[in-house]
Image (cartoon, rainbow, N blue to C red):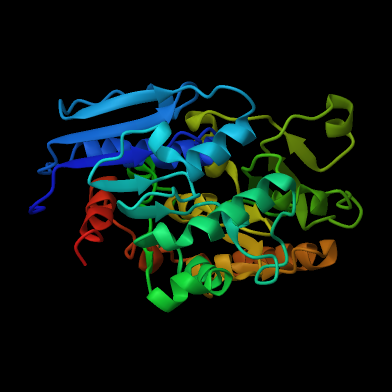
Length: 362
């Protein structure tokens, strides 16, 4: 791939510390490392701690700068975004992987994987904490400095255009999906013969953020779920006494092998999240080959089409009814076919990075 007249590239990812975002960004950086480009130099600014800080490139043209903030994190972030030249050496091209754009004249590609950047008037589930409101204010201030905005689903693209009219007017929002998990090539779940007499075993891998909507499980009891739901495995910590009295099995944060094992044992993924820019567990469940019971919201429809079982994420009754519907379909021999959905995903992160870089010339 040739990039005429170009010298240096800067990757800005100093604010990526969350588990999901860290895995996405680390995969992106590894994809960049494996891609032959004509950049004479690539400077990657990453956090001084966490998963992304562990990135060690093999390409001698890529330099990693582990950025350590001084003072309160919020103030430092504001200054970085509004006055970046005092903190970073920005090259001829800039890719921001941390959601909020920088105020620089350089050609800038902004990768948004934070759904809370949407306008609350566009998506009612968006968080209104000071952190998210501040991120949205800075994004509006710096919106004009962005050449391209990249998101992972058509639903996110549509809501983002409604949230930032300048980007809609310039038609600068593009959709680039991410590949299925690397580990999925080592695993094929396929059709599973299992007795459902006691109810479904459901799996929900998610952190404890409010928008993940764990509260919907609070009203589930052995009585109202009898014969429908046997167990919900949740990747949070909880009091052991509470676990013994509930259908909910809090297993804490899982490593990759443990997560794969839970997918293998699950009858379905349950995903009640109110808001997502993508929803990686949906792709993971498709890769494993299991059914998906998910909130009836645009992000889920964009990924799962009509193959998932949908429910109202504000209603425990709707969730239970969706589980009953799935159980009945499974007992009749139905099983989802996710192949058409997975076939639309990029083959690997190298392809994803190539799609980003092409946007500098389109």
